[in-house]
Length: 173
Image (cartoon, rainbow, N blue to C red; front, side, top):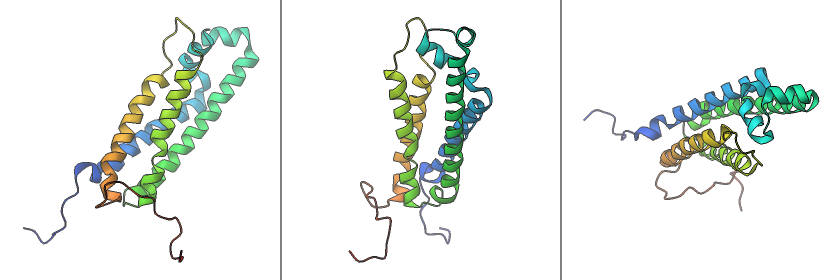
């Protein structure tokens, strides 16, 4: 036996942070694409909701198309910066095992569930394929959820379920 008596962490406890970095990097690229290309980055979303091809909508009502495009670019900026912040949290707090970082990273599966719900409940038009978030959100939801569940023991060793610690310590209750 080597001089290191510390048991080796299971695979996901050692490498789970990498899955979250990859997911965050993918969304960083999605956000960047939306910032640069606007609705042209994924016209299927507008087409499935409006029932009109994106190019036809731009030609028939350029002001409405411009407003939709601005919304996509703004959402892209939000996704881009959420991804940057997530990567920072993952690298500087999640990877070393800080409990608060594990809790914060639940933002991804919750956000994915909300995106799926919003897309699922939108009034989509018949004859158009499902918007891409209806397909990608469940996949990313599953990966982030599984990663968080499988890394729980690293952050909460010896517990069956995590309990949120008080944010401020050192105070007498």
